[in-house]
Amino acid sequence: MSIASSNNRNDYVGNGAVSTYAYTYKIFDSSDVKVTIKNLTDVETSLSLTTDYTVTGVNNPNGGTIVLVDSGQSWLTLGKLTFGFSITIRRVLSLVQETDIRNQGAFYQNLRTNSVFQGRYYASAIGIIFWICSKNKLYIQRKTQLKTTNLDITFL
Image 1 (cartoon, rainbow, N blue to C red):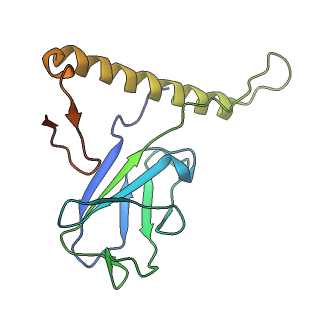
Image 2 (image 1 turned 60 degrees about the vertical axis):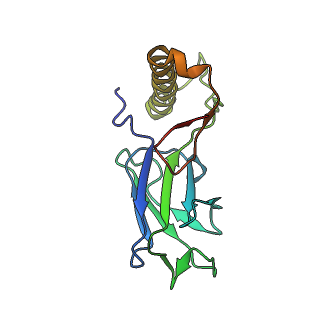
């Protein structure tokens, strides 16, 4: 089994007309997705599942969508993401193995497949971290400030 996507995030900018945003990777639970909004003054707000957004496409290898929930939040205009605001959707899987594979009894292929996929996801994430560290040895010693919604890195 291969990992269909090494992408773990999707970024969008609001245009005042959209409340549904796609993510392009497999998740196993609605809580595997973290959503962050950045306003026009670069202040980030982490959104809450069910209060601020809902998730579709759980267990779909091609991903799904995030649907914003209008509860009168300041970052929404008529239920749509306000013009100029940024939204970041990230896959964040917990590092807990919840699958108990026994050595006797029935064997369920879908349990093994999902467990292997999660293991390969973690291995690829660790590999990426090691590659970044090896390429940026001089920068690792400095304090790094990263914002969730920004791909730019600022070294202090």
